[in-house]
Image 1 (cartoon, rainbow, N blue to C red):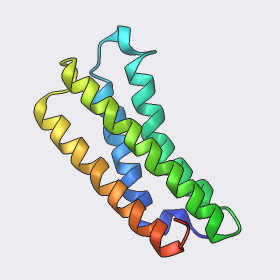
Image 2 (cartoon, one colour; image 1 turned 180 degrees about the vertical axis):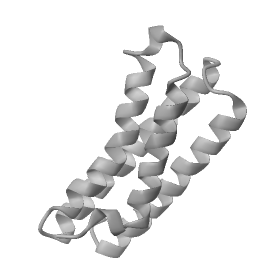
Image 3 (tube, rainbow, N blue to C red; image 1 turned 45 degrees about the vertical axis):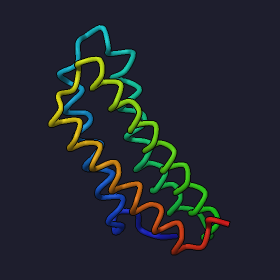
Image 4 (tube, rainbow, N blue to C red; image 1 turned 90 degrees about the horizontal axis):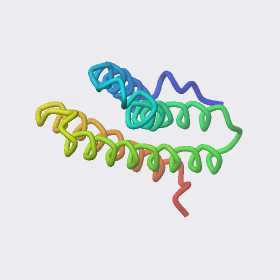
Length: 119
């Protein structure tokens, strides 16, 4: 069992989730049960999967949850693109948040390799 709060990647994922929640507050009300919910769910799933993996017994379990976190980050990456293309997210916000998602995915990939769960 590992403390997820001690992982730099979890802290970055958590900050990304907070940024997504803040940014989606500005979305139109008709998106509340659409893109807003999907983006919030995908972003929070990244940190949640890291936390759940840290609560598991072995490296293989941790690796599996880290891989799910990568999948959620990729889903968020698409939702950011969609929000940008729909005009809900300006260029600066899009560039900043996609950069953060890319960094989280890079860190997750590195951690997956470190725990040896990518095979």
